[in-house]
Structure formats: C-alpha cells, structure tokens
Length: 93
Image (cartoon, rainbow, N blue to C red; front, side, top):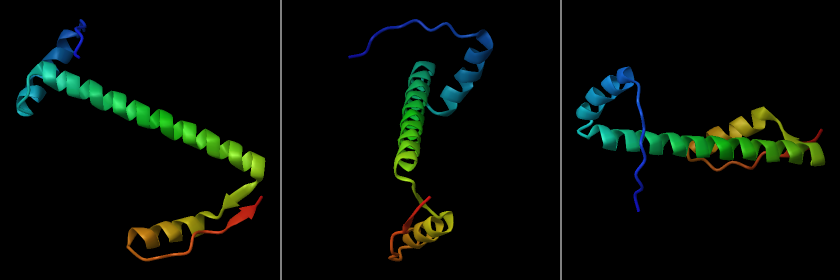
C-alpha cells in the first residue's frame, strides 16, 4: 500500500529532475520514487557489506586465520574464467 508524504525540493533540483524524468519517459514523481528506491537499496547493500566486513574482522581476530591475497586473486580469476580451482588455503597469523 502506498502512503502519501510531502517532499519539498529546492527549485534548482526540481528543474534538474524534470528533464531527466522526461528523458526516461517517466513522470517526475515516478522518477523520484525510483531514485529513492535505488538509494535505499544501495544503502542497505552498503550496510550489509560493512556488517560482513566487521564480522570477518572479528573472526580473524578470534581465529587468527587469514588468506594470502595472491591465492585468493588466482582462485577468483580462475573461477571467473570458468576454470575449476582449489580453494585458497588459510594460514594462521
């Protein structure tokens, strides 16, 4: 269900949005809703990324297990090119 809200835009921003929305074949309202949805999704992804990084840092601090970047990069490049590759081996710090 949609809810109504009021958003006051600076006139200069509204003037920028209007031609962008027209070029996209959308109303200014639809363009702004899409922009807000995109921004919200991006921020949620960023929050999850940071949370994952902090958990990984805690795990390294707790276990001392790390991977050599060269091994991880080689594994990633092999997998990205469709080749099978053994998983990188972890090391104790």
